[in-house]
Image 1 (cartoon, rainbow, N blue to C red):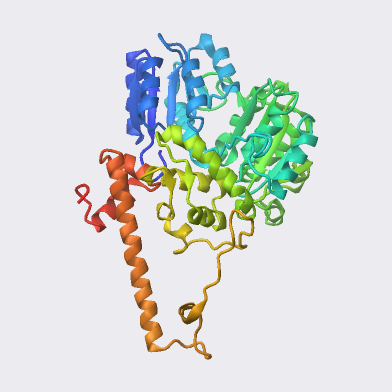
Image 2 (image 1 turned 60 degrees about the vertical axis):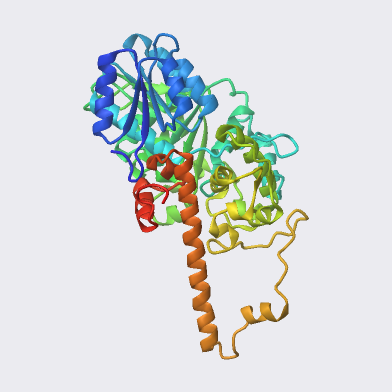
Amino acid sequence: MIPKGERIQVLVADDEPNLRRVVSAQLSRDGYDVHAVEDGAAALEVLRDHHIDLVITDLRMPKVDGMAVLRHCQEHVPDVPVILITAHGTVDNAVEAVKLGAFDYVTKPFDREEFRHVVEKAVRSREHGKRDVVLASEERGRYRLIGQSPGMLEVYSIIEKVADTPSTVLILGESGTGKELIARALHENSSRRDKPFIRVNCAAIPHELLESELFGYERGAFTGAVTSKPGRFELAHGGTLFLDEIAETPVEMQVKLLRAIQESEFERVGGIKTIQVDVRLVAATNRDLKKEIASGRFREDLFYRLNVVPIPLVPLRERHDDVPLLVSHFLSKLNPRLKKNVTDVEPEALEKLAAYGWPGNIRELENVLERALLFSDDRTIRLADLPVEIRGLGGTPTPTSVSSPAFPAARAHDGAEGRAADETPAGGVATTGEAAAAAGLKEAVKEAMVKVERDLIVRALSQTGHNVTHAARLLKISRKSLQTKMKELGLRDGTS
């Protein structure tokens, strides 16, 4: 079933009315909002006019086929997974499409449970691994990455040395630091660049399905296996296999994974034939694997097999000088998509962006800038357009001050007013007047936050034609949370 929160928007494109009706009915019963169209041309129109979370398309359709829909998605909405529906005679084409970037495929006639699992897997993968791709010009960075901080320069150096080798790479870093980007940089700068790059998010796949996902299965291997299907190791033959969130792999599965990596061979689930592959492996995790080993959740022998070339990624809070470059990039990326023309960030806002701790790293920065662009009334992002936690009214404190010329460190408060705000009596006990002032400050902050929340919700509703679902997605909260907040603010019936 779908994750808690907002309903997932699914686009179904198929020229067979009966199949389109059956698929739409099953998806609706499972809690998805469905947009059903009869061909690829109509699918492209829906993608242009609506926010779509998942695309399910027939491979062969009149006017525009499934491969064209896939290419459009890769170019314009790369975060959206694409599932292909194919007949037995076109399975080879579907396999090639997966190698080219499709999420998965199902073969007609398909088992309903198999179809449900593929859809759920795609939705989980989108939620777990929304890509934080940042392209770079040479003056901003290298390998399609942005950054000139010492940590990023070290990453560039490692990529240059190991990209065109068969060595296994382990990418270590917090969520949102760009681990998939590093994996793609390794692939695209190797002699395997013209071969498949296959990504598997181990956290998005139920443990009981992970073996068949990686190694494939034979017909009849389990209920719902109505045909044989290659796994991700086979699909990546000759290219690169990227195992994201490798620490989420169950221990019993790690044994089989270790053997496949060491021997470059495996058997499909339910099969007896040994399949040999030539795969360059890149793994990534946001966990401390040594702690996972100590707790018994990760095998030590697998860790040493993966940890041939470690690439540690520096979190954004330790890359303050890279923030202006990232801001500039995201403005140029987001403006066309959001139909805005915001070109500047006022110095005070830029200083706050650089000084913030960014617990969500680059992904969080992009989300904040997208929200700021949507609510900006002119060509400049101002301090008032940023969330309250970044403006300094709460949230994650920055561990270090910004010292670059672009971001002068904030001046210390001076004068009697500044001292009165910072000092307390020698015993550390506040006077009655100070307590009242503190209470007054809390009330003022609370009132300011309520006003900001109200303004943001009113703007989002106006921007989306009072569509609560789309407004909630715009505000990055669930539909239920938005409805509750609207009721609290007296906005239940619209913009009153």
